[in-house]
Length: 89
Image (tube, rainbow, N blue to C red):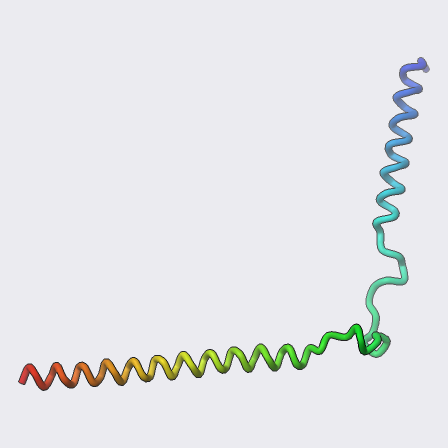
């Protein structure tokens, strides 16, 4: 093996070693992962029921407002149609 080949091989080994060390450090530790809700401290729990109820409440409020808007516009159009029918007769 020549000196040039030995140097190239050494550089490849060093680069692969550094890359494997960096990759190994990025892997999460074995103790992280699924934790049952009963083991999570109360300060770290997300108040899901409040968020879900708020979202449903918001959607229902928007839906009711939209239906009310449609109903009022429909009544207005019906009145205008009635006025036009009276003019034509």
